[in-house]
Length: 94
Image 1 (spheres, helix red, strand yellow):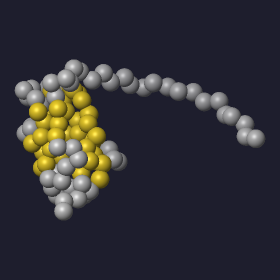
Image 2 (cartoon, one colour):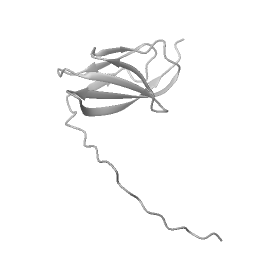
Image 3 (cartoon, one colour):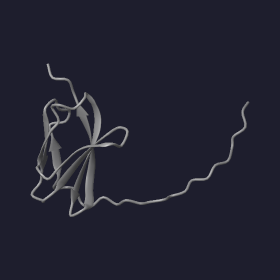
């Protein structure tokens, strides 16, 4: 029988995502591209699972064809404020 060690949790930052009801992405999963559907002027930043930024664009279509198959995180920002982060699956094309 083990002994439970006490631990403390510290909150270092609180990020509130802004209303994202008018922001959608697709297709997801994808093999070639992902599109952001919104009327807002947004910036897209794509990160790999290690947190490394791999793409950034102001276009609403993100070409992911050359990326390695795997999981990515797509952050949508407007005027430097994060609106939403999506989990994106890059699949292998057939």
